[in-house]
Structures are given as C-alpha cells and as structure tokens.
Image (cartoon, rainbow, N blue to C red; front, top):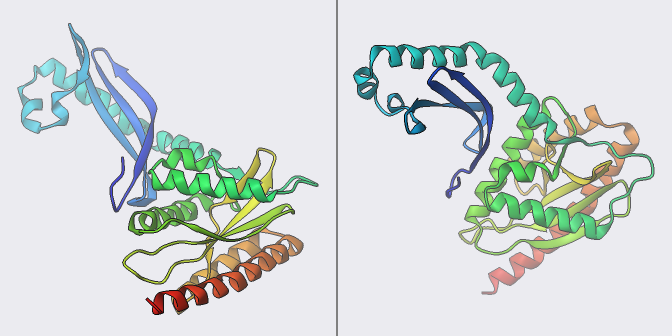
Length: 273
C-alpha cells in the first residue's frame, strides 16, 4: 500500500488456531512507523462455508451478538496471540535484519560501474513504487543489529522525496572499480526548490553488490545536513577499519566535488529562466 506520504508492505508471520477460531498475524513495515515493528492480528471464524473475517474485528456490537461459546473461543485465540506477542516480535525483528546482508567485502571483490548504476536505479524504482520488502534485497547494513532502524528512517525520507519529485533522477558521477563504490545522484526536491545530492555507497558482498542503507550521506547545503553527516561519520568510523573508512571518505570527497559543480550549473540554468 502507498500514498503521497507513506508506504507500507508486509508478510504473513504466523497462524494461530483454536477450534473454529483463528488469527493471522501480519508483520507490517511502514514508512510512517519507522521506530518499531507493527504486528497486526486478523481474527477469523469458521462456519459451514469456510473461514471468514470475524465480525468482532469491526465493532464490539457485532462481538456481543455472537454466541457465548464463540465469544469465548475468539477471546482465547486472541489471548494466545498476546501471550506469544513478545516472541513474535523477536522473530519479526530477526526476519527484518536477515533481509539485509552484512556490509563487508570479500577479499578481492570489486564493484563494477554498471553494477552500481543498475543497483541504484532498481532500488530507487522499488522505493518509488512503495515495494519496501523487495527494496531490502538491494541493501546491506554496516551495523547488522541496530542499523536496520537507521535504514528504515533513511528509506522513509527517500520515499517521501520520490513522491514530491517532479523531475527524474540524474546521475552525476560514479566511482567504481574497488570493493566500495559510490553513485552520486541529483534528486529533484519538488516545488522548484534546489535539488538534493545523495551519495549511494555500494559495497561488494558474497551475494553481489549492495547499497549500504544505514549510511545516508548527502551534500551538505545547510547546517542541519552537516550535523546529520557528522553523526553518520561517527557510525562509519565505529564500524569500519581505518583503511576502509578512509576509502569511504575519499568517495564522499569525490561526491561533494562533483555535486557542488552540478549544483552551481543547476543554479545558473534555473536563475536564467
């Protein structure tokens, strides 16, 4: 599901059943709720025609009209869901983390220019369409445990940006040929404002190139972005060795140089209109 402000995606996590009553537990991911996992239970009831959504889901009035025995079974299956909820949250969190690979290149692996370009285009397309779970397959985490929440925040920000944009992404620069690569984009901010310049950090992994989605570095055009970039660098230095950290910094320096040049051309062109 998607609209102009939020996208959500999900999967069936568990099925619980008690006699003629059941509950489907869905794991939902939403760009509107990026601080936590959302487990949504859907109560079902079975009669001679098969399974159907329980009327108790819609209104308490419907629930109160049910036979007492059916009320008890529905209450029991919901109790079982609440009893298992903590374990279901653990499972859902592990599932979410396991959808991303660890951002660590194997010895001798490199990212080719075409691979990096295609990966970023695919990732941006999936985000634009609100296909969150599919987009996770494009990603890697620098921090396998806590990085997933930074990744969701970043992807939420990007999703909203795709809905505001009135012009297509423009590739500004690609730095490839090593184990870490960078794709620099000009992203339209909508409403005639100055464009944004994100750097997509791409790393070689055993599963192929992946975007490091818990690291969001952009050309800093204001103090707020400088502060955010500074926080990102602290995480980079905490997770990477000195050599790899220096390589990522050199990629970002190249990104800043090309982005500043492109922004200056954009300003000159748009001021003349």
